[in-house]
Image (cartoon, rainbow, N blue to C red; front, side, top):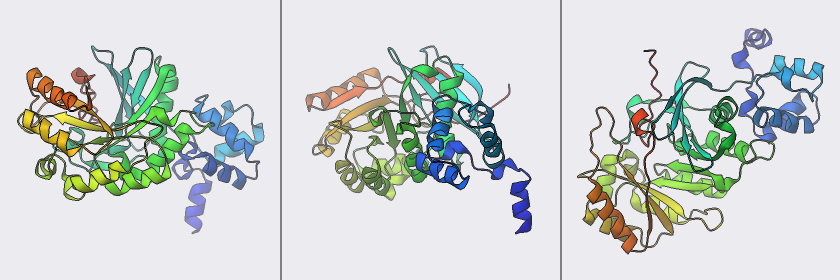
Length: 357
């Protein structure tokens, strides 16, 4: 016991709490434990998330004594930019280093007047989807709330584009709902008036289909949901997405049907079109029948090939025919143009690999 106490007291900083991990309520509890008023928690949250400070000395609304005390009882750690690759289409992929030496990737996607940030929730992924490059890295660990939020904060304050990030998609490395508690905490920080102050309508969680967590999230927090579907039958989906063996289509679709989307928005089903697997006209007809009782829209994504990928992209003619069948059945079916494929930043291409060459 004496040894562990002394380790913390002599300042092994890894044992100190990272303030970026805290929701407002957690920050208030921490500040109360320091003998200070709760409103100080709101000040600190704003310094961290709205001013982007990385030192306690920069928190000039706090007394010098309190700043010195905080420096001995807490820390401020966020992911560090290692390099940024730029695609021909304007997409930017950021390689970020975590405190323990692992690497993750975030993607800045350009819009007409703003940027969307695609962030990671895990280092690696355990879902083992057959079409995804991230799956080949294996699962390393869950990201903390501070590492999830920290991707946004780092890129907001350390890139020219950061000030114009308006939307967040949790669609990077990892399965957000397999890191459920930390993902929800991160969302709470994103939408807090004293955190990043974002509207929940500007945040989307993308999942491979963890049905119990979909139901739970519907009760805990109201956020946009996108579900990676990719097949109209269990046999095909089992082959593409092993999670389907645990939560087959009937179970998944029932959870999705009951999910309370914010406002009048529709749940999104993502459907990756893979040549010879799920992209035929017959596949489109069966998909239309499968989703007949769902209030949803469809994002069609042409498979993004990568070095050594086991699948191929379908022809433009097949893609167009697939989409037209869904449109004829009165679905909102958009062909999502993949961005950043030339720098392996498109859907399913993130790996967190780092080479010095």
